[in-house]
Length: 143
Image (cartoon, rainbow, N blue to C red; front, side):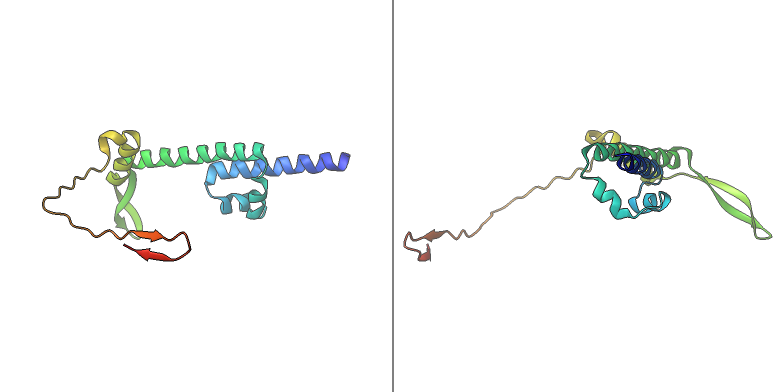
């Protein structure tokens, strides 16, 4: 009994370490490396409803971190070196990501910023329809 409790405690600690790592790095492979475990272990744990729920929360945290970083790059931008002196960056320019800004807008207000396209057709449309009948005696035919 005591051995089983130690095992459960060790597993709980390993799960917590993995989930914390996943919330930070956002990939199963990298989180498993940080937690010193095989990535397949995570998939075995997913059959436990409580673990699956905790993992879903870690996924939300990781996704929010991605959104935060996308927002930072779109709005605050990143410092990019443009001038060099003796091999060292000496001048910088602030670059912003219009593409990330577009994705953020589409995600925040999809009704307003979604792609729109209209197709108008004028003229005749012709088509051929083939109907297959089934003979109750097992012989098929076309009409």
